[in-house]
Length: 318
Image (cartoon, rainbow, N blue to C red; front, side, top):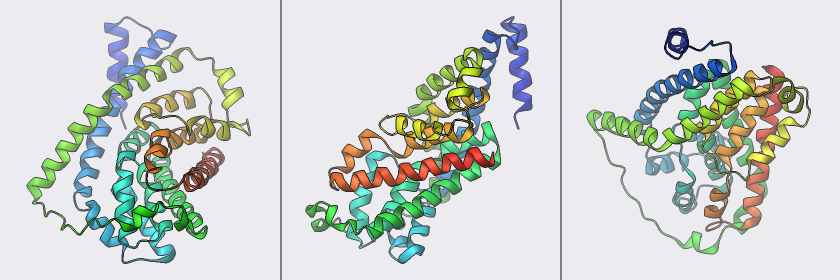
C-alpha cells in the first residue's frame, strides 16, 4: 500500500542520513520516519471518514435506536453501534446513566460499553496500514464478538443489584439531536481529525520511537522465545500486564508492529493493545461512581477472557 513511501524513506535514510537501512541504526531511523508518515496519513483519512459517519449517530440517537431491540438482537445492535460511536472512558458515566434511564437492559448496555472503546477508528487505520485488511477486519469482528458475548454473559448474571441506587432515580430528560447540514458534518469531521491528532501525536511519536528501537536493536531470538507463538502463556501474560495500565492504543500499535517483526505472535501483541484500549484503571475509577466493585470485577474479567481467547485465535489463524 505504501511502497512509494518505503522507497522514499529508504532514499532519505541512505542519501541524507548516510545510513545503511540494513544496519541497526539505519533500520531504526527508517522505521521511525516511515511509520510516522504512514500513520498520520491513515489516521487522518480514517478519522475523517468515521467522524463523518458518526455525525449521524449522536448519543441521543444511539440510545433511541437501542431502545427498539431486546434479547441477543439488542446485544448485536449495541456492539455494531459501538463501532461507529467510539467513546473514551470519560464518556462512560453519562452514556451508562442514559441507557439505564431509557430502560435498556444492562447486558445490552455493556455490549456497547465493551465494543465502543475496543473498536477504535484510529487503531483500525494503523492496523490497516501495518498488517493489511485481513488483520484489521478480524480486529473489528473480534471487538463485536467480545462485546456481544460479554454483554450476554453479564446480562445473565442479573447485574441490576450491582448498580448504585441513585442511577435509577436520575432523570436526564429527552433532548432532540441537533440536525446538521452537510457542511456542518464536514466541519465536524475536520475538527475531529485536528482534535484527535493534536491529542495523540505525542503518544504516537513515543510509541513509534520505542518501536523503532525494538525494530533495530531488540534481540529477536529472546523475544521470540518468551513471547512468540510457541509460548502457550504469552497471550495470557500480555493481557494481564495490560489490564492495569493506562495507555493510548495508538502508542502501543507501533510497538506491537515492531515486536511482531521480531517474532512475537500477532495475537499476543494485539491482545496487549486491545486490553490497554478496553480496560484501564481510570475507567474502573470512573465506573465505580455508577456501579459497585463486584460488577466492575465481572466486567473486567469477562472482557479479559474474551481478549485472551481472541489473542490465541489470532495466533492460530495468522
